[in-house]
Length: 97
Image (cartoon, rainbow, N blue to C red; front, side, top):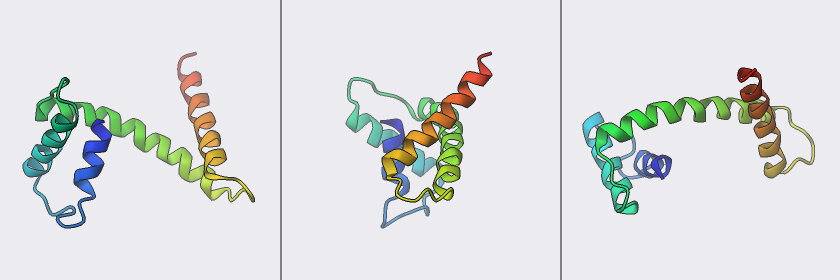
């Protein structure tokens, strides 16, 4: 839900990325709390969590881009996602050993 709130606010077609940091995060907090009324968070909590979450998302996105550039003929998006997930899981497994 945190990522959804961030995406909804950052992809706002009217205001886009023209928001200042405080205004941007205030809107994300409002969006998150509106959709998760029994799990309310303040702006700082969401910022901290997003900074940790975004690193993982960006890393996985790198695997997705790598797989999608391989241009495997006939692969569906689901198959590409499976391949990216396998690459990511191999990386996670190698870190735990």
